[in-house]
Amino acid sequence: MSRLSTPSAYGRSLAEAPSVREPLHAPVAHLVRGSVIEGVHYGSVVVLGANGGVELQIGDIEVAFHPRSALKPVQAVALLRAGLPLDGELLALTAASHSGEERHLAGTRRILELAGLADADLRNVTDLPFDPVVREDWLRAGRLPSRLAQNCSGKHAAMLYAARLRGWSLADYLDPSHPLQQSIARTVEDLTGQAIAQVTVDGCGAPLFSVSLHGLARAAARITTAPPGTPEARVADAMREYAEMASGSGRDVAALMRAVPGLLAKDGFEGVQVAALPDGRAVAVKIADGADRARVPVTAAALARCGVDPAALAEFAGAPLLGGGAVVGGIRPARSLQLLPTAACAPPPPL
Image (cartoon, rainbow, N blue to C red; front, side):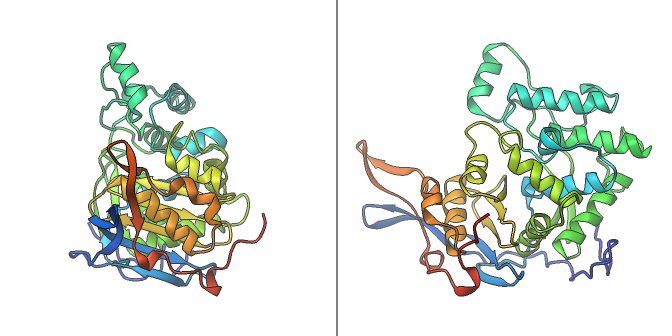
């Protein structure tokens, strides 16, 4: 399915859909042991200035790609636009790739209760909790994979709630032609500023909309710069205030939002990360091989490249590489990410 509407349903003009082709990724991180580069992670990175202009690009930021769960804040905005009456913790859970902690399960049940629905109405796949410790406890208790434990259950519960409020059918809410999914697609186009290249299926079973890395960064910036009270601002406020509900205890994306005041951040499977500041500066990262060990250090380097205080980002430099129990190296961002900040990416003003 292809959507090439111009302008968007919300009045913003749209660029053409990004092309579907092999991406031209570039080196973004090195695994260094001693003084020798032992491994190279390829990928793409875009840094946007407060004016929306591209201040740094590495690799291929315009090719179509799958944002995976990094698109969830956009989906949450779409659900609010469709009438979803959630805020605070439950809205953060709507945009979450949660760890499967009890608070996440309880929050998902609460959304379903508000909709007059139950676990059985969910259509996401069954899974074990995402967090390794929670998963081990789950298995020790003899519990089986469930739709509620799967990391996207909050989003699915919110989709059902919005569909019920609009009087739309529930059993087929994941069909790309369903009014709910069409509404989400229109919001994806509006916030990314481009037509969707392709619609496929995400791991949880929901439609997945292919855009560009540049478009993903643009969407994050539009969410963080929206006026107070708008659906965009409500999503940003909820995710920042309830960072652990939008992810989980000990998760790097929550720690990143806690470390950088005002930052909105969301990760996605296969090495995707997006982050944006209240003034509209934003970064988006795609690690070609999907490696999480490179995602966070590259994101931190991109934020520092855009003027975020490196001291606030020190804990995100990546796990050390050990040799015989001693630290002998680690992940090092590529030299193109280590350039000094430009004037257009000056340090942020005090909040």
